[in-house]
Image (cartoon, rainbow, N blue to C red; front, side):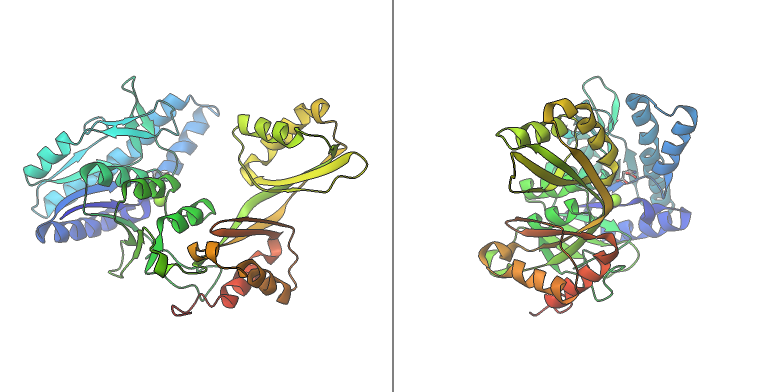
Length: 405
Ligand code: ASP
Ligand code: MG
């Protein structure tokens, strides 16, 4: 089998863990597999490098930032090759330019466009374990780029797709994907499998197990993906195309506390207002999530929406700067809110899921501020203080702790 194995930063944080991971890699190699390894920077290296840069220039050039950040992954791969050599097994480390991972040019958030697999296959033919830097690419100027925080998952899946690997294993410090964050819901259960679409929703709803784009790519190229622990041998969670029969009504609950609500009150009740407002926010690269518009009264209406808390100030600024265009009465905002969502591909064909969710919240006397739904997801906005209680109540209501429902 050709296997791509990705290890995250915490899995290679220190010498002991690097050696431990090296052992696991060699085990798989000795079983007769062709092994390609993708690594993140060790531990907090990326954060530390960012802090270092800010100490010197609070507004560093993005190109130089990528030159700096890419060094973290390069350290990891060289150290891992050494650890494997120490076990008497041939291995070679390669960076993005050596295995020609071509990316778009936008520094800090580049996308992989193509990978030239020739060098990698040559090294595998020479019986090497091939260890590749995650998170980085090379743009058309020949400069190093990075793929955005957490991007090593995406490197691994892109490589698995390009090499036509039999399996892509993402090793991390949790042993799989859970029905909810176990720190919030004690009864959370590890899922044996989850569909690409559900995983995509969970990833974008704040479950930090997999980089969003890695799941998109896995779906597009039908990559066999497994999330598992680098510290134990526990079976992980398989991410795959969901079959109609297995579709669970609800598979997971996600909690996102980093959201803020903005209300724009007393805008003109005429066509085009929503279009103008949201296209302005889009132009400022601010993504808007739940949207609610009130019924108009006296030629006026209110529009509320949520954004990531990190975008709150920018969003307020955009509206402040365009006060004349909207002639609103006032802007209101609140970051004491949280978004609690349920995800499940069976939802699309089953009525009553939303009612069950709302009943769970009603029983706990939790007030719902906003609601949004999609084919496989329902999100509600609640007070931040109520978020954990809401997640537990919903988790209980749908009996997510038990496999058979
Ligand atoms: N080292 C990068 C980060 O910390 C990429 C990754 O870990 O996937 O975001
Ligand atoms: Mg990660």
